[in-house]
Amino acid sequence: MIAELSVPRPGTKDLFYPTQYSQSFLVQCVACLWKQRWSYWRNPPYTAVRFVFTTFIAAVFGTMFWDLGGKKSTQQDLMNAMGSMYAACLFLGIQNASAVQPVVDVERTVFYRERAAGMYSALPYAFAQVLVEIPYVLVQTVVYSVIVYSMIGFEWTAAKFFWYLFFQLCCFLYMTYYGMMTVAITPNANIAAIIAASFYGIFNLFSGFIIPRPSIPVWWRWYYWGNPLAWTIYGLVASQFGDFEDVLANGESVKDYLDRYFGFKHDFLGAVAGVHVGLVLLFAFIFAYCIRSFNFQKR
Image 1 (cartoon, rainbow, N blue to C red):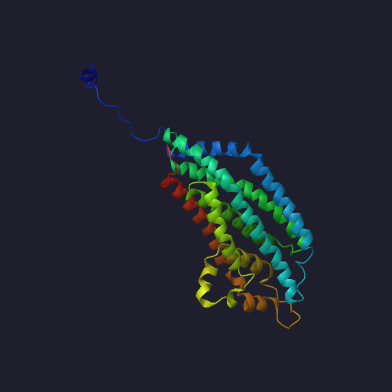
Image 2 (cartoon, rainbow, N blue to C red):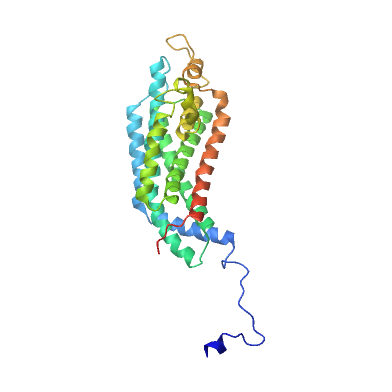
């Protein structure tokens, strides 16, 4: 009977499907984005706690650096205002990267099962995982920026506030995607946290705040340009203070002091903005590529 059934009947042919998946790539992307939206909406321990933590940190930074953004009389005034920018990039950036890792780890387990069932491919899942973070990070950035910008007392102009909002948004996004990327290249969230944490100290050291770029030895200066946080601090400081001609106590203008001591130029803002967009796309692309290429499923 087995031999008889294994022979095709006359006039029949083998089943053939033109594509591996039943739906097109676009439909898969929409379905995955719909699934991820509900998954995030039903995960308040991640989404709601992130907003609460951001609001709390914004209030702390706002009260700690109260009205320092408008003071430009001495070099120390500028350093104080820069401290708020540096602290935001470091505290909230690392918090975003660390908080997203267990979430993506769990979502990846579901992805392995559903991809094995032929429901969708890896790229639509990665596309949805990247996109679903944007509205949450955008709200987080707006809440933080409005609170901190007003309490610290930076100059209220549309251009300066837009630049502040843009650089903070890109910073929170690429740090979130950095956390997702570390999960995609490792078997679990614990190893991802160790790998990610190993770079936080380096990001901090070469950020350009602890040691200004002109003071970094030449043989290490290349890492400054490869440090994402250094670009964000550059953009924030140059956009807020890089065009001021106010004279400091030492007789040097704010613009000239930032150029001499930190190497920050206001005319370089366009390139800095372009690098930020590139960093966001780079970490998102590496995450998608690793999700597609690596499979850490043991069974």
